[in-house]
Length: 88
Image (cartoon, rainbow, N blue to C red; front, side):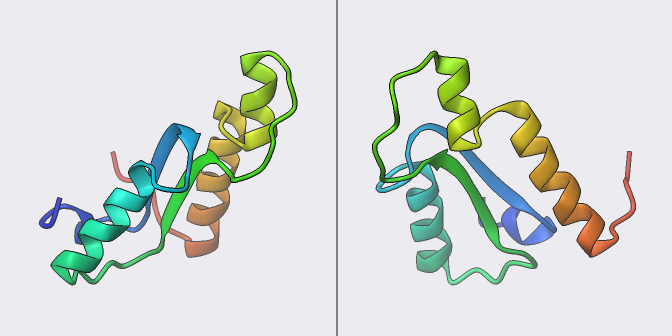
């Protein structure tokens, strides 16, 4: 990770759980401990520290921004704002 993270224009974490003390927190701790300089912020997708209303799993994903469309919109908006060309 220490070699890879600085190479990306966007780093996202995705977890089907609370953000507090989750995977994103561990990644951020690692970045801090390694004193890494990143080109872009970390975007953590996960459940915020709030009560989530009872609903189907798919509905809860939409509410929490964990559905594919929400994630795609964020990344597309970020890339558009940066005017980064697609590489493939």
